[in-house]
Figure 1 (spheres, rainbow over the protein chains, first blue to last red):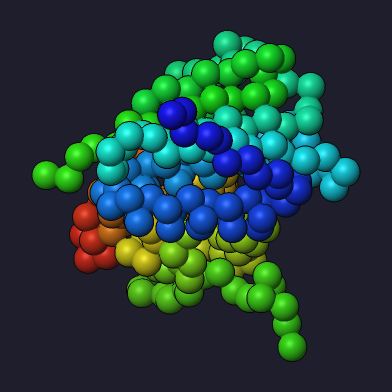
Figure 2: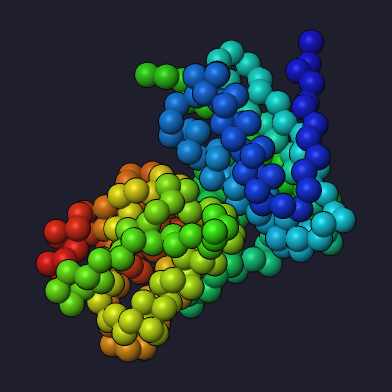
Length: 141
Length: 120
């Protein structure tokens, strides 16, 4: 049987987003996910949720962030998450490479880069207002 | 009573002519906290006149890209006054954040406070 997604609606408030991250962290701990994978997922979630709240919803209290997530497979398994904001979206290919020397001092683009590094897969959908990410957890050694 | 958000986010100590800064927070993530940290770091240069700043990350477990932006701003500010910024005691997970974003080449990073102090 397919594992259903758990749906959560968050306000455009980073404190609430962090509370949600705490919930996910607790579930990862319960699934015996390693510390390094927990750090990686937590940081990717932080970046994705801040992007949705700040750049997508522009902190608009009338807008929401819609989240769907699930854990799959044998422990520690796989984590999948979809995060959709109510902003106009963006084209990820327009984000300048933050590691290029001319961009090194610019503040943007690093969040996206960290998400791509830390998660197994990161894909933007729709107008760019929806990000789908997954993480295959390392088995404990 | 001041609200928690207005609490100081940095512990500052002067060792010789070096301003040594420790972060109060284990997680440097929250937008509001990052703004306060950025303001406090800026005031070290603008108000206190610090030119040599050593940031000690021994207490820090998480750091987001928004915080990296503040470090870049501080570095730029110090360069404008012919100052120097050194980072130290960064744990392996956070060092990786610097490496991924290639900021490990941009900042001067030292193993611990002693090595940092000796590098000015």
